[in-house]
Length: 133
Image (cartoon, rainbow, N blue to C red):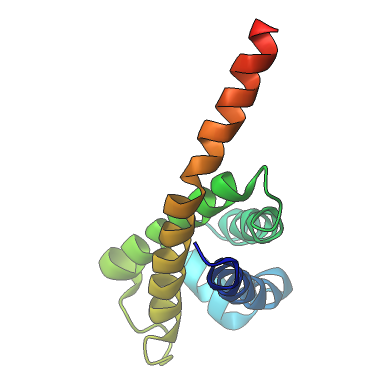
């Protein structure tokens, strides 16, 4: 797989995740509204921000990039389900921007997880070889 394609996907996912952190950590009106509606304010808002921050960093470390991508997939899946069943596609007249960003992040992180699943085989082979030697 082209390393630049992978890098672009990782950077886009990280940028989308990191740009929301200011709003989550500063307690912006939109973030508080979303998590109050979900019944998870403030723990859900701050907790999801921490998870997204850690995943954004771990995407760029070879040993953790698969797990980071999988974490982002799960986080975005939860966000999309929340939009569909609780929040609605459009939140506070955002034109569906948060929903679209969650979809983009889900698709890109899913692609990364599929690409990085081979990392597990490499790690497992190293672990098995070290046990046998």
